Length: 189
Image (cartoon, rainbow, N blue to C red; front, side, top):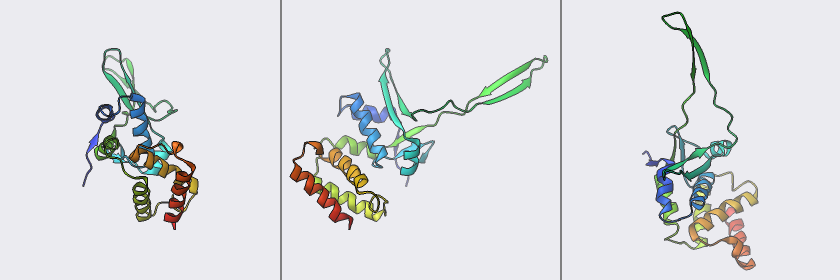
């Protein structure tokens, strides 16, 4: 079954009704894409986490002077696009140069993922529920996060907990941080 998709402009507009800061909306989308919670499509094909890491997409948006929005997903440090240069002769014998650029990729975001980001503000979960659910999902998918560096797993789950509970872990007491890390270590076994 194919997932519904949204162009970046529509996704940003939907989230702006819940989060009024444009930079915050772009950061939320970008973070969700990078941790795999929001599917990203390029030219109709869903990118895997390794492809997303390789492309390192950035969500950019700005309001133009005429009031319209200009937004999209870009690759940082992207070199100039490859060009095809061809020569042809016209009927009167003149030579013409044609330059053809490949089309820009069409980026889309998973609509259900946007809805989940939108609802994160309204329905807050307990951090233990978030950690347990994500750990179960990672085990089912046989994620390399479970067997890799523990700091990577902490970072991933910190983002998940902050997004779904609305609580910033940096404001937690040391006892809560300790319980959080212990729960992750115990769930990894």
